[in-house]
Length: 135
Image (cartoon, rainbow, N blue to C red; front, side, top):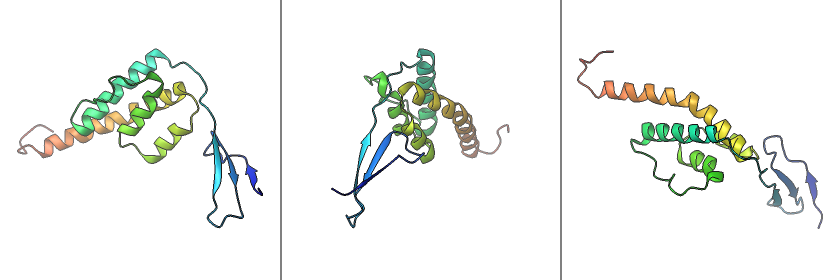
């Protein structure tokens, strides 16, 4: 089978690519690399859960129900899938090769994002009032 192998693009460090140029649809084969076994920091894990609960509640007005029974090694995927985060953020999370790294990155993002969500919620509450509240 005539094909060529290239190093993965910088945007996808966790895959190797085999493209088949004779195929008019540019099909290929991707080999995904396994996650590195790195234990997550319990403090980061707890903070991620707390930030996720806060952001989910601010966005959806309800406590997240998908944390029950979730495997600790899949928390980052659960959080990234449940929240309407920027697609670039989600892609950057997927590119990391350990759960510990993904959790740390998500905590960093959610720490920055949560205050913006709180400001938006406060504005919505003021807008829904009668206009005589304090600014």
